[in-house]
Image 1 (tube, one colour):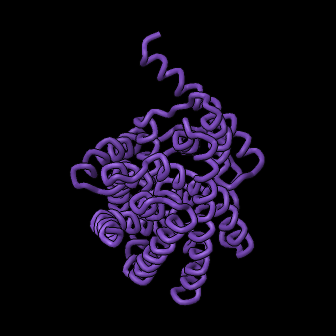
Image 2: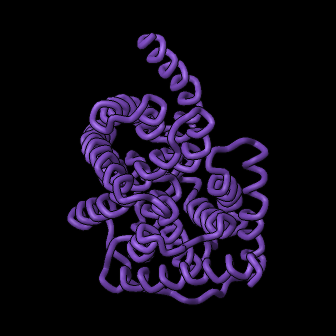
Length: 355
């Protein structure tokens, strides 16, 4: 069988397994059930050595769809209120700094990682970006991917449950259990949204945006919605497919890992998650009392669970996805500017101390 047919069959198999898990997740009422169900059904297969795969191009396409969806939530009223986000953005910067410092200490002292690997395991930046930069600076990319992968899995289970519980109790959100399978949309609107995805990705790469597959379509979609050229958004069925693909794609971080590596990654990733979520809860309470930002919204904006994934959580729960996404983009940009400068200096300082 030609290699491309094998790849196609493997992708179809992974999506089919993910779809079964996603459907069960939806039926049992899990927050973000389609994504979590797909993840739960595919990660164990990867851990057991059973081949699973999601094409990077398909994942990129689904992330672009999420970007277009988030962009559709931008309104003139939202932009007018964005001038008040300075305090919360400063809070994100302080939170990221504290998390990085504690995380490096935890990975070095508890996880016994070498300095460069510890730095990239602890840095709460964009997951994809960290996995690209880490090997170029001598970090162990398998260890970094396992730690971040474990953290992502745990965050995606814990945070939606916390947010849903708090938001439902506060009466700020109701869980919409409806499933609209219709794909109908006016042709001009459909072409405009597709254009945002097709043009947005290469434009964002040209402009060196972080997480370009998401941020490019997001920005263009925000522009066309703010200009009131359309009020449409991607159909729910497409968003469901995006959740399945993104959830199933997480399995790649666990493929081929030895049990000892998985246990170590779980221990370090789990410890890091306890630290990051606990501190995020404390900061979110501060945001609520000082900045008058609802706790659930603040928590989603703070927890470094992956830019596409946290944006998708906000979309699924209807909790101010524009606010959440902007704060995560700010976090990723901040880390990508600071980390490549400070981490090598810190590693050299450690080596000089040993000498």
